[in-house]
Amino acid sequence: MTKRQRTLLFSTLLGLFFILAPTLALYSQGYRIDFAGGRIAQTGAFYFKVAPARADILVDGTFVKKTDFLFGSGLTKNFFPDNYFLEVTKEGYHSWQKILQIKEQQVTEAKSILLFKKDPTFQKLADKIERFWISPNIKYALLQQRESKAFWQLHVLNLETGGKEPLAGLISTKDEVIDIQWARDSRRFLLLTLHKEQLAFEVRSISANVPCFKTPCSLEYLGEDIGNIQFSPAKEDQVLFTRFLNTTQVLFEAQYSKEDLAIPIANNVIAFTTLDNHVFWLDTAGTLRKKDLSTNDDAQVFQESVFIPIQETSYELLLAGDTILIKEDTTLFLHKENTISRREVLSPVFEVAVNSNGNKVALQNQLELWILFLKEETEQPQHEAGELVLLTRFSKSPQQLSWVDSSYLLFGSGEIIRSVEIDNRDRLNIIDLVSFPNPEFFWNNQKGILYVLSENAFFVSEKIVR
Image 1 (tube, rainbow, N blue to C red):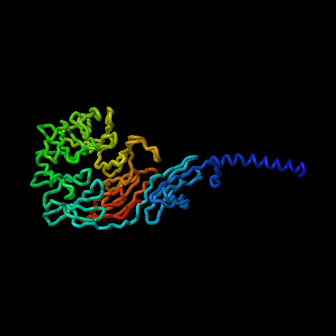
Image 2: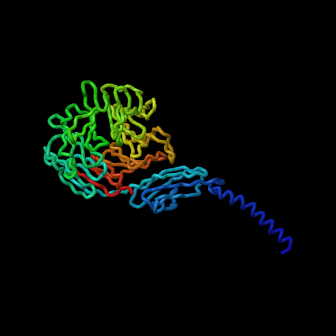
Image 3: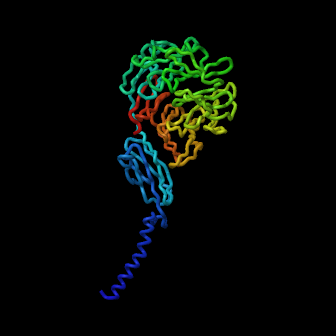
């Protein structure tokens, strides 16, 4: 090779180096040539997490990839900064659609996508049912079944086997059922009935081999003028209840299994509720207090008085972590532990649903559906702690709010049971799941199935989400 040839080769290689080196460096940093837009720009990516797995991801109508088999996740790269129409589909399921933006060197995430099954089938479990109550462990349902025009009977339905039998020891009656509350052990329940304009309280068991210490455990010995009554969260054979003494309402606990005398816990109580082993109450001075029922410790102040309760106004306490939501008539207020202020959240509020993690609250405000974020959301879309977001407005009031998971809600809208996501970027994915006349429903989050009562028939669905 001559000297001239060597010089030419060296110059060519050197020139290629100066051309390719910056090109490779820019490529490694995510720069691409956008021929359509006539630009060089850094790209971004989309990250999806979808249930069920193996769903198809389409970007602007073009198939990109399937989510993986194990985790249902999928990462799609090299998108220029822009808005893209995204669609996640799977045969037999409703699709998910949304327009999301790509920014330079950023990953746009949609990590909580649920696909709901289309046209789910339902199996009838029982007829002549007027009301139902699902146990906390979602293994049993109490069914109020009409025996004749005048009489009804309670039946126990095993939701795992489908077996149904009349409740032991409870004959047919025409007393009105006011309320039923399950105990945490899902083996006993508190029955409140109205007999000849008199309220009657009983604790009953769902089976003979788990007796209510005696059958039934009548609470008649506690006396009259009982207000709110609940099982003690700390002791299976005790109840908590309020009763008016003179002009003040007193909170008591009583061991009903031995018909022990009621022991006062607090005076001047406006409202109370329970969580874990604690009881929380609001007193007439506006102070919020709590007491651990599993110990002999004295009550503690949750929050000093920051307002004076209004006489002859209904109050309801709802617990979520270190937050107590107080519903004063139809106005919702937020109280944080060890703070010196209260915050009005929304008015009017007709329905409140706290999610299982205690970090989000769904609120129904006439035709509107709102989400209150009690904790900071660091994943996309991000939200600050205390942020109140208007999700959407409907032509009919959403009813029977129920969390599917932390990102989706179920609600009733007339004869339709619908789902809605809480990711409010772009459009909301709202799905019409099923239609029943005047449905009452319960969502089984453990199995992803739906129980529906409609026209006195009780149904269960196949698995709707996975």
